[in-house]
Amino acid sequence: MAHLISVNVGLPKDVTWQGRTVRTGIWKHPVTGPRTARRLNLDGDGQGDLGGHGGEMRAVMVYQLDSYRHWQQVLGRDDLTPGHFGENFTVEGLPDDEVCIGDRYRIGGAVFEVTQPRVTCYRVGLRLDEPRMPALLVTHRRPGFYLRVLTEGEVEAGQEIVKIADGPERMTVAEADGLLYLPERPRERIAAALRIPALSPGWQGSFRALLRQADTPGGAGNPGLNPDGTDPRPAWDGFRPLTVAATAIESRSTLSIWLADPDGAPLPAAAPGQYLTVRLAPDPGQPALLRSYSLSGPPGAQRYRISVKRETHGTASAWLHRSLRTGDTLQTAAPRGAFILAPGRTPVVLASAGVGVTPVLAMLHALADTAPTRPVWWLHGARDGTEHPFAAEARHLLARLPRSHTRICYSRPRPQDRQGTHYTDHGRLGPELVAGLGLPADADAYLCGPAAFMADLTTALTTAGLAPDRIRTELFGTAAGLTPGIAAAPGGTPAPHPPAGVPGDGPAVAFTRSGLTVPWKSEYGTLLELAEACDIAVRWSCRTGVCRTCETRLLDGAVVHRPEPVEAPAPGNALICCARPDRDVVLDL
Image 1 (cartoon, rainbow, N blue to C red):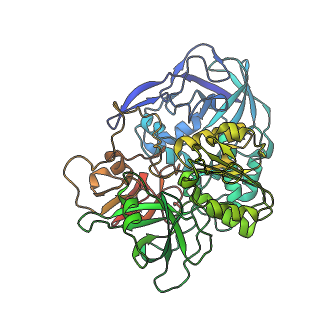
Image 2 (cartoon, one colour; image 1 turned 90 degrees about the horizontal axis):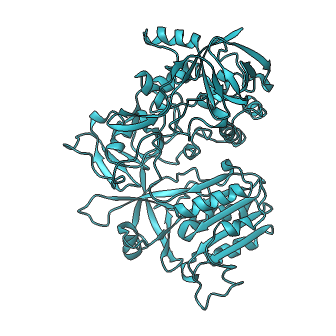
Image 3 (cartoon, rainbow, N blue to C red; image 1 turned 90 degrees about the vertical axis):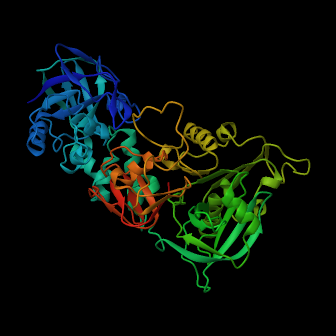
């Protein structure tokens, strides 16, 4: 019979870590006497980051005394006491390789259900003063697990833990954890996990993404952890010269550029939705500029078409519009990006604003060429007819899709812009319009445009019934950072800049989206730490090569991972939390 050895609670507090302030509830301490287990947590307990911890499906964290004994031996520690791993219940029994997702237990007056393994997070390493801990929990198959409170009631240390129901599929906590984080992922077991009603929605979404990958030939990376790190293998390494074969004006501010192999050979096929990164040298006396532009032409064409909006203060776009000529050469990286039209028969929503039309136009080409029977909703917003690129091209493609639906919104139409001919709606493309479309819940949506536009439409689409993992977005420029629990810097985050102090003497590290190139300094340890020293927006969670949140496209160069990650990144990518440059590198950051 399993027993509840200790009940541990703790409220969030601010702690100092690497010169920053972290808000965390990882510090838990044993309490005596009864505590009420409620729907969201135990009385007296709290979480500092509700995005990754807490909530109904993660109300109570469980860890086992047997794992304490394991880590005392592995880590050579004699100071580990109940609550040290951030758990609410320290238990004797209930090992991760026996407890199954969906199992139900009665403790005292409360009833609980197992919902998921612990999520990887740097804060357990912070608590234990052992940075490797998130990866060790996974590789040693001892993550611990979360409980949902089915019946609220009092619990107390010393009580028996009585199993009252078995979860379906008999998938242990350790197996579920390994399916998401470790390389071996049998399709039939992923499918089995999705048949467990008790599995938390976040893990269900991850396993749905893994199942789609298993059913799609050539999949790379781990879409269950990082959908944006699943590009196909790049067609070539680094940059190669491509010749400007033609240019075309698409709107008042948009220029298309056709690129071809200098020898006339067909270029490798790009997936619909991908982009190119080009290296520009508008001023020979200044460092080269690196810019990324979506491919807007038909996938599989022998040439690539990129389309560039002239920005008011854009040095690169202004030079391309003003100075680029047919016959010029552009140094170009291979097509990249995981914002790719997925094959299938489900309905498709393609929504864009302004020049955000470029990647979804490539998807529209693919649908017209290969899947003309799929239902398609084509939604686009522009200021007026002069700022509506590819209008005629899109109409031609939509005419080849008999099950297509079109809504074109002009926010400020000119007198010569005719409603019913050039556009369908006066106003902005927003949630109100989406709500009235009657979109099917099994539709896959692809959004590209300004950040606020995509946030509004994502909310509208989920309200309309689409699952969050069916909605994909593509953002130009620097993506928002993800630094869990880290307090915002007073006065906001400054623009990217070289790190303080004496410049390094190592390989050049170029951050394309941030427009910054700096020499490597070994004192930073990892590329993530260098990026943080430059105030570049970064995304991370574990900092030990297991969660893949930091996975970044490596457009040129090579890195060394130290320590080795739990699973290697997709080809052409790097896990910057444990990577160092082996030579000059170009990162899509």
